[in-house]
Length: 89
Image (tube, rainbow, N blue to C red; front, side, top):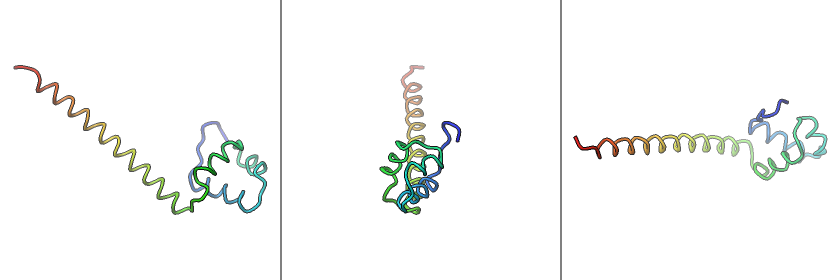
């Protein structure tokens, strides 16, 4: 797998389930071409989640990103309006 390629949360959960079902962590890591550190980081982040919870988390993160962009745009608009209003005509 090329460097920087991301796995979907669904794929991550499937990989973690393989380890939980008894497959050796080393073998799974070799098979999906990730490091063991990545596997344990995923385990810490997604370990106790089910697939529907992961999908909900992904949706919430996307909504949060959208709202952050919206707030940034509004702050920029407010700043521009203040600059325009502060000038004396």
